[in-house]
Amino acid sequence: MAKVLSGAGLRGQVAGKTALSTVGQSGSGLTYRGYDVKDLAAKCQFEEVAYLILKGNLPTQKELNAYKTKLKGLRSLPSALKEVLERIPANAHPMDVLRTGCSMLGNLEIEADFSQQDQVTDRMLACFPSIICYWYRFSHDGLRINVETDDDSIGAHFLHMLHGEKPKELHEQVMHVSLILYAEHEFNASTFAARVCASTLSDLHSCVTGAIGTLRGPLHGGANEAAMEMIEGFTSADHAEKEMMGKLERKEKIMGFGHAIYSESDPRNDIIKGWSEKLAADVGDSVLYSASVRCEEVMKREKGLFCNADFFHASAYNFMKIPTKLFTPIFVMSRLTGWAGHVMEQRADNRIIRPSADYTGEELRPVVAIENR
Ligand SMILES: CC(=O)SCCNC(=O)CCNC(=O)[C@H](O)C(C)(C)COP(=O)(O)OP(=O)(O)OC[C@H]1O[C@@H](n2cnc3c(N)ncnc32)[C@H](O)[C@@H]1OP(=O)(O)O
Ligand SMILES: O=C([O-])CC(=O)C(=O)O
Image 1: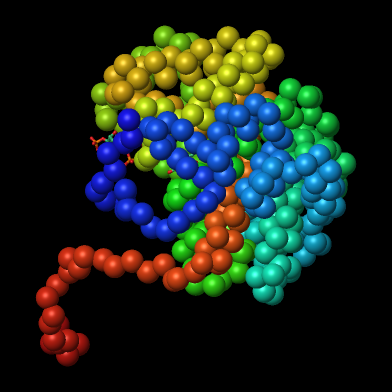
Image 2 (image 1 turned 180 degrees about the vertical axis):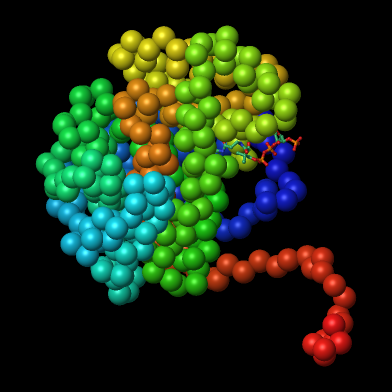
C-alpha cells in the first residue's frame, strides 16, 4: 500500500519528471532505471551501478573495465585543493570539508560548458574519497597521504586511504553494496536542491555543493551518524529497549526510522541489515547488532515505524572501523551519481524551478518616516 502523501513539505506534489528511479511505488520498492535495487546490490559492483545511472544502461565487462580505469586515473588532488584542506581544523565536520572541497574543485577545474558534464562528474566521483581522506588523515594523524592508490574500486580506495592498508575482501564487498544502496532516490531533498540549482543553468560543482549541504542534516543523510551516536550508548539489547522507551515517552525523534515516501519498509534496510549481521559475526560483536535489532523491534511495536536506509548502516560502518563523522560523506561519494544524473536530466529538458507561496504576512502599509517609528 502506498503512503498517503499530502500536506506540508511539497509532499505528494509532482515537481518534475525522471527516468532514473522509482521510490515506493508498491509501498516499499526501489528501482534504478528499471532494475530492482535488491537485484543490483546482489549482482553488481558500485561502478556498474554508477555507469547505469549516469549513462542509462549496465556496462559490458569491457565498458566497466574502461570506466574503472578512467576513474582510477582521476584520483589525484590539485595542490591548491590540498592546501585548502590542510587549513581546515580537525574539529570541522567532514561534510563541511567536502562541501568546501567540492566548491574549491569548481574554482580550479571549472565546468566551462555543459559538454563537460560527464568528465566533471567522473572527476568528482573519483576524487571525493581523496578529499575526505586527505583532510582526515592530515588533520587527525598529521600525514600527507598518497591519494593515488591502485585499488580496484571507489570503496576500496576510500578504506585504503582511511586505514593505511588495503581493505579485506568482505569490507570492499560491503562498500559496493552500501554505495549501491545510497546511489539514487528520486526527488529526495538533496537531489531536489541539486535540480533547483541546475534549473538556473548553474554549473555542476554548484549543484553538488548545494546538495552536500542539504544531505548533511539529520533528517536526511545525517541520520546515519545520529543513529550511531544513539546506539553506541547501549550496553545490551535490554538497555536499548529501556532507552528507546524513554525517548518515545519524551516524544523524541529517533534517527534512522521513518520515511517521507515508503509506507511499509525501506527496501535498502533488509540488505544492509544482512551485511551488518555478517560484519558483527566477523568482528565478534555481541552488543551493537543485537541492540540495533531491538531498536527496530521496539519502533515497530510502539510506533509502527521501520528502519530506513540509514539505521543499519551505522553498525555496519562501525564494524568496519569507519569513524562516525565520516558516515555521511560516504553517502555523498555514492549519491553523487544520482545528483549528477538528475542535473543532466534537468539540463536536457529545463525550465527554471520557481514555485509560488501562500502569503501570510502583513497587509499593504505605508513606510513611516524613521523619526516617527
Ligand atoms: C536516507 C534518508 O534520508 S532516509 C531519512 C533519514 N532521516 C531520519 O531517519 C530522521 C528521522 N525520521 C524523520 O524525521 C521522518 O520520518 C522523515 C523526515 C524521514 C520523514 O518525515 P515525514 O514524511 O514528515 O514523516 P511522517 O509524515 O511519516 O510522520 C508521521 C508521524 O510519525 C512521526 N515520526 C516519523 N518519523 C519518526 C521518527 N524517526 N521518530 C519518532 N517519530 C517519528 C512523526 O513525528 C509524525 O508524527 P505526528 O503525526 O505526531 O507529527
Ligand atoms: O527519499 C528521501 O526522502 C530520503 C532518502 O531515503 C534518500 O535520499 O535516500
